[in-house]
Length: 63
Image (cartoon, rainbow, N blue to C red):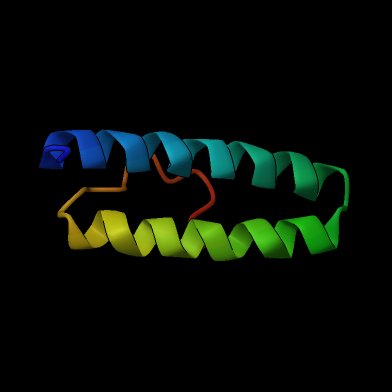
């Protein structure tokens, strides 16, 4: 069973990947892709917040 640290690290990595893909989708005006990624972004943000992670420095999208 993964430790809390491993769970947090994995979710932070996913959060950063989703944000990077969101920025590309927005730049390419890929609205459907952006909307899909936005759902993942919000879910990951909720999980990280519930784990007590301060997103101030890593949240580049800020939605």
